[in-house]
Image (cartoon, rainbow, N blue to C red):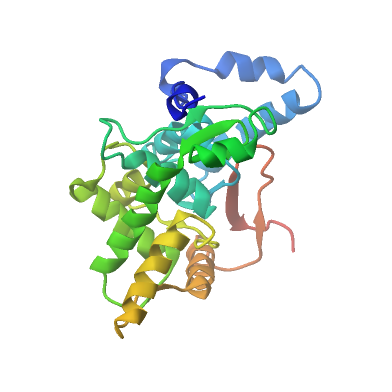
Length: 270
C-alpha cells in the first residue's frame, strides 16, 4: 500500500447554491426527534438574520470544515448572515488555511475520503505520513507547509502580542495579496467582508507549530517575537457583545439548536 492509494478520493464541499432545501426543512416540521429540531433551528436562524438588533456569531466546532461544510460558512459570510466567527484553531488553520494554500495544486491542498479508526492501522498511516481526522485523510507533508505559512506571516509582522482576530486578519490579507491558491477560503472571505474571526485556542492547531517556530528562531537570535494574547480575544468578544444594540439591559443567547449560531440581544424579561 502506497500513499497515493489512500490520497485519491477528494472530499467535496457542499454547494448550497445548487438547490433549495426549503421544502425538505418544511417537511421536517411534521416529523419526529431531531427533524423537528432542525426545522425549528432554521426558524431561529431566519429570525436572527431578520432582526436588526441581533448580532450573529457563527460558532464552528469539531471538523465540519474538513467534512465538506466550509463553503456553507463562506456563503453565510458573503450574504451578510454573520457578524463574527468563533472557531477552533484546527477548523480555521488546519482545514481552511490548509485548503487555501497548495503550492503544487491549482485549487489548494485537499482533504481525502479515508477510513475510520482501526480499518488501516494508525502506525501504517504514520509510516506513510498521512494524518487522520475521523474518516478523513490529509497529507502530513502538506500540513507542515501550512505550519510554515503561519510562521511566514508572523515573520512579516511587528513583534508584539496579537489577538487571534488580529493575526487572522493579517493571514487574510496575506492570502488576498497573492499567497492564496483557493480564492474562496473562509479566512480570505472574512478579510474581504470585514468579518472578524476569533480562535480562543489558537495554538491548538497548525498555527501553534508555525508561530512556535517563529518564536523559537527569534529567541535563538535574541530578537523580539510575535505572540498570541488569548485575553485580548476575551476582551474583544466582550466589546462586541456590549456594543451590540441595544446597548443596555441584560443579554441572553438564543437557542442554538443545530444552527451553530449565537444571537446577542436584550433579555425581554426583568
